[in-house]
Length: 291
Image 1 (cartoon, rainbow, N blue to C red):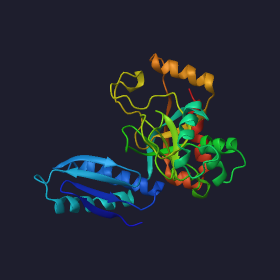
Image 2 (image 1 turned 180 degrees about the horizontal axis):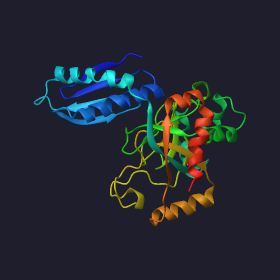
Image 3 (image 1 turned 90 degrees about the vertical axis):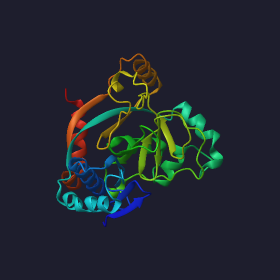
């Protein structure tokens, strides 16, 4: 894994840990970006983390681009020796799989899909070797997910499944993007799941929808009063399947500002996870039942 540094115009430097996503690359990126933040380098105006990379925006009138590059490279050794662990939170997120709204939408765009004969879930189950859609859905929600970045669309989390690499679900994006995706759709593209924060265009396969608001620019939602975006990198998510009745109930609670997401503080250690993925996941998900 060789780090690549490149300029992005006059005011940005892009730092890529690896060409493919991995938890090791994520932690290295997180360590360097945190080190940049802690170094308080004169001229740095913004640090934007991503899946296995980050970008730094700087003021070239305060620090020369080459000097900024040298500062970043000098901090890489910090990431090589930093412990790959963090104290974070695990969040239980209800999902109404096979809901009528995403189903109606995906059927309008079958001409843009790899397989026009069925639904997105039919296709995902088949290419991942599952006998039934229900088996695929179980695989999707049975293990927790790691939020590796938030962005592309405001508030949208990219979620990386916490299983051994050979067990990861993989589903390609649509052949051509849709022009419509319902707000709060739970989607999948490549090795990432996501939750669409707003209604709009999209190319990820659609599996269901959550009643829980994750982006509120007006900050009127009870649990988003402090910040308009719910997720942050390092969060861990446990999807919980629900039916229509529970979906309607939770949606009503969210709209009435009576809903509180189920959140618990947990420690995540990459070495412990790599040594025992199932045991680590059981401990993480078990924390949701404490208290």
